[in-house]
Image 1 (cartoon, rainbow, N blue to C red):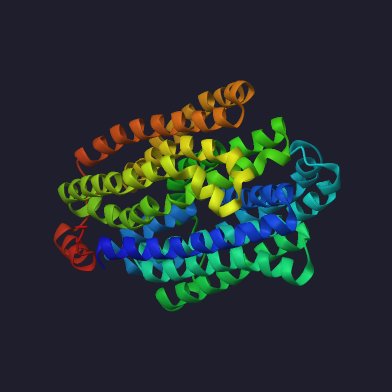
Image 2 (cartoon, rainbow, N blue to C red):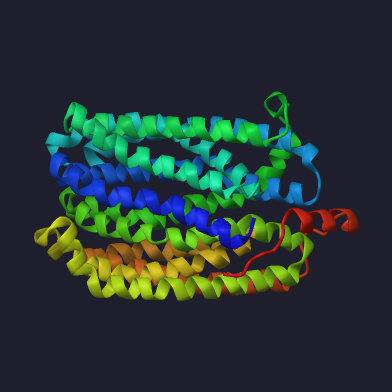
Length: 449
């Protein structure tokens, strides 16, 4: 399947949930209130963030399964997949326990929630902890489907997740009233439904008998060697992405969180465009890094140019029209508090969108250590700047610092990607004639847009 078609499937799968979110957000804001909705967005973020307990194995499975298929080593897949998924279940359970342990402190103290909502927030966080292992296993199953370049199935599953992730909370409010605990319980139910759908499709994709395959310690070490540094990025990168909203809650109060999270969450949705491309690019570049480094460089440069040309006009429109868009969507009062945030963040969205292409390329080359060290270095500078700008400039300062970090991220990744696509292949096939010809047949390169 061509890279263009895979990207379009990814885009469709991401746009549908975004549109549903646009429709359901005003309803939830009206019926549960601004502060409770702000807490709900924090819960969404926490479920996503605690999925870092996959220890990078979702991405590692994509890279390893794609490489094994390109090398004709299909017989290795059952034990590889079984080992990865078993570890993901265990790791996700640890993440869920950790969130449950922290729930009382988060709900009653750290998030600066009003007294009337503290008890509901603690209960909501306890319920959200159940969704962590569901999320980690789903990430692994999704990685397997992406390794097979079955982005049609991934797209359909993403639409299912979006529909349940936004639709179930609305149904919960309609049926049971504005209970924050029940709304979060509906999110966990959504994760369970999506996990079952992923499992069904992966079961059909893999060789027969993979569920009975034995846990393989050697393969586990191989996955973790890729995933260990990935985990560093998975911890630090989301911290930089979402720590701003938690600091806003802690410093300014949970009542102001929604004025920042709503425009930022909406703008983050526009990253589905470059994310759709980078998700399709990752398994393709993984294969090409083994079989044809020159073609890998050409595909990377083409994707980088395309992403910039697509994202620039979109971000310009956001910067200019943020006030009118928010006014039409959520009313004049909300727009007056949030439009400047949206305009400032539009620059960061442009830079972050372009950065996804070199990021996927660097990790496809196996150089996850470099991206992890980059994120650690950025984080050391980012958090103090965030505190400083939040103190002096309020919500606008948070958005400015986010833009600064996005610019630094892009600059470093461009340098790393250039090095990765210029070096000789990291892993030459043992039998070039056999594996190379098979890889080219199984992964036709159709990267034109």
